[in-house]
Picture (cartoon, rainbow, N blue to C red):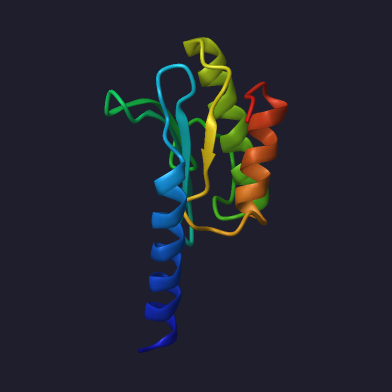
Amino acid sequence: MNKNQHKSNKRSRRRAQIRRSVVGGPERPRLAVYKSLNHIYAQVIDDLAGKTLLAASTRDKDLGADKTGNVAAAAAVGKRLADKAKAAGVSKVVFDRSGFRYHGRIKALADAARKGGLDF
């Protein structure tokens, strides 16, 4: 097994373990984060209804970030998501890091969302 397959398998196992315990409902939806090499995506999801309530990513045209794969862009996505959540009436969420380490871009997004008013 090559190195990338091994990393992917380890993340998949971590993600499955996290998802067993993290469930978003209408009063406390799930904030799911995914990062690729160049972008970061975040969604607020109501798992019981099976609906995505709102989303933000570095692929949004009006984000205003020059580079999209860095900590500053992730923080901008977190702030944008918190603003959208506040407008939609969502204040409490459950954080789902999708098997990624709570470090770097994931941490920056979470801190910016907290600073923007989300509680998790």
